[in-house]
Length: 80
Image (cartoon, rainbow, N blue to C red; front, side, top):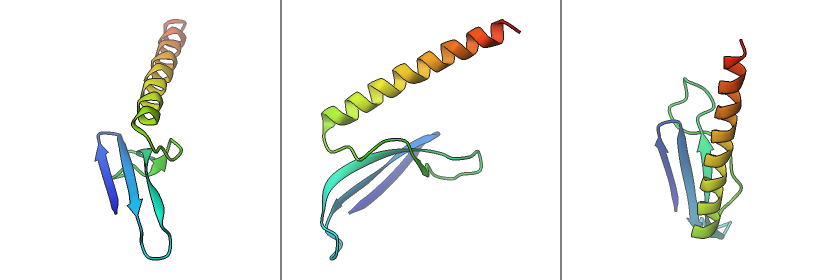
């Protein structure tokens, strides 16, 4: 099974089950749109995540990192 969802600039791909040649454990991988012209999220930003706890940790860490970058960018902008 393959599922791809994009919401805004971000998305995820879910891979699970067997395709005949490559049986896999279910996992989710997060993606971001690589350009403004991208229709779907197509650039991987996470490793394969296999549990709800791993997904929560990745999302929480990403939010914190993005907030820190935003704060730094605002500080840099204020110095100009």
